[in-house]
Image 1 (tube, rainbow, N blue to C red):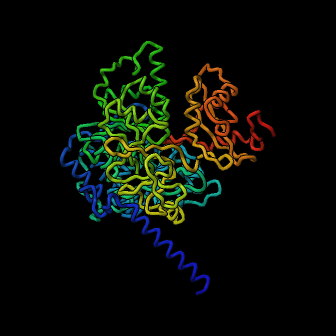
Image 2: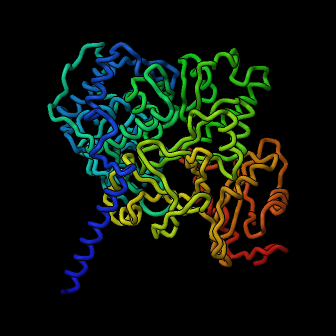
Image 3: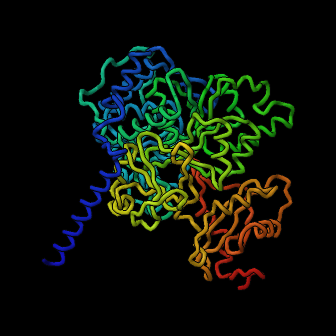
Length: 591
């Protein structure tokens, strides 16, 4: 056998092994995806069913940037989706299997585009308008989208990005349009049929979303219609969401959290959703009251904003919710869903002390469609606070129906670990992505032993009923590797956040000649706090072993986060560059 043939043979074996591992990762409790968890054939059928059942019921309420309210019944929403689908099909040539990119924020037009694409069997590649130009230009090209829509304020930028910026090649976009080019409302009349009889299938791609990543180019996560519907089914069943409830979206719908939790889930259950163009701490509680919202999905950052606003409200003589609002006005409110970002114990305590409202912590990734686990909604307040506060980390809790979870040795060997043992959080089930797009290397590594490897470090503990409660203790790729000993930044941040005067803090692994990596602290102080570096270092050294303590403190005005609330530690490494060659000893640093 010659070298070329041997290499080709190895590649073929590796490819088949990866395919087998991907198939294994789509099984839950021995049941493959061919045994569907949902009764619908596709999004088109689901939307039609909900419209026949409740045509006049409100499905979508949208508040634009000026606070104007727009309402869509199921019937009107269906008409507008059909109009949009006809435009995509007849004018732009969009067919089943095509991809449509969007450079849009939260808007009803964006929602119509999503559902119109899914009704045709096309996939959406949503872009985060807050990302840098180079990243978006890469995604527009890599996604192989044939059409791109942008909001009016993004059109000039979109033209530049499609043409290629910062060394990126031009994207192969046939049509670049503004969302204002979409057909406008025509009352309750409009197309009575879809523009094509070719129906989508559950295995058709629905979303191509790109992970933030820590290094290298973004990875495209391919999610099918069934992924979205299966995860929405799991979310609604776990949370007890029914058709008589109303949810609110304050998170960006270019990300799976905003899309799956507060757009797809209400459609699946026949519920209603309130879509906001952006999160407004000033309008939040008034909108919850006015729209009779039962559930809101948030990230930890937003909880901190609500606490700070509550303190300001009290300072001027109002209730914690704002002028004219009373606790009784929130009697209908059920709970918050909280995930995506890191939830600190101190934030849990502060939120509980301030509001006393139910907080259901959960966990998931784009690669698992959205959520994979939650605290049980049936927990008493005492039980919920036990799992949130009585351990070193707030519990992300128990797997939902579409997936299983387990802890495996972080070395990728496939060794499964038991209760209390730390390793890598892994997931398999019907909500696990189809694959990474055009990344066989990432697929091979991520699905090495038939489970999706999250890259997150965690462990689980059993309760008296035998349920597994999972905890996330850090990001394996973000663990601080000091001289071969790895530390979780979350452990260090919990100590920093306990210090009065610290508003926010991140533990940063920065390159160091002596130890490979050293520990730094990025700290945001409360207004008027007089803390200095010496105060913070002394506080930490009383509570942590010296190797684990921050050696340097850099003060900032804010903490960089992604649009979904995840901390961007790597963006802060350059702030510690001056200490690259410093050897830190207990007696003081030396160069």
